[in-house]
Image (cartoon, rainbow, N blue to C red):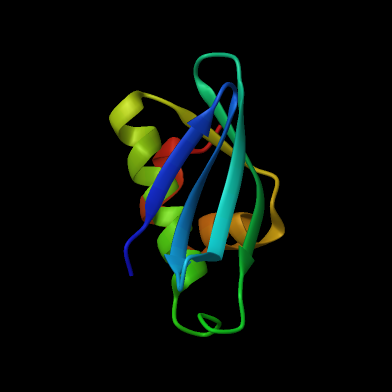
Length: 93
């Protein structure tokens, strides 16, 4: 699965496309210059159960690390990933 990233102003998303449509997406907004708020994760039926949501969250974590950002996971799915994976909690705010 190829994860793509787009930014528009203070909002952005990591997403997976298939058949010309977005099949899975994690959206975020920036609070200031150093805080990324993950607000929603959605995975379509075609990718459900294949780890797409986890891959999107991990892409956000890598992006945060590369850019010196901290993450607030307001999205329940993203929060559950952070709760389970202690190795990514270095980017938690």
